[in-house]
Image 1 (cartoon, rainbow, N blue to C red):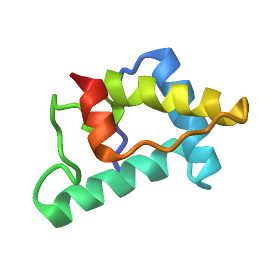
Image 2: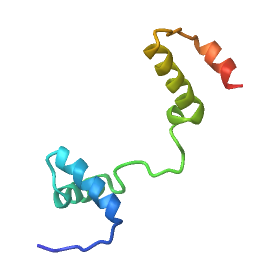
Image 3: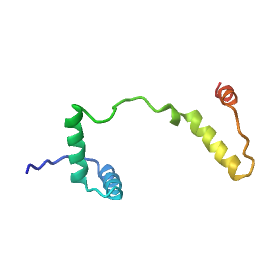
Length: 89
């Protein structure tokens, strides 16, 4: 069996190990899954992009935080899509 050594940021490695442990995997198994899926799909098994999911836009996060605050204060007021679009401008 072959062995591969890679360099990875300590913090990134720690986060990955915690995630994989939660999933019942170790680092070696997780990398094997990645490699097998890459081979099956003939490429990286997920989209690589610089595009940010619009769901996590600064505007949406601000509105979400405001809504959470209102809900916690018992002042939750629902807004229509049109009202939210007006707020964005």
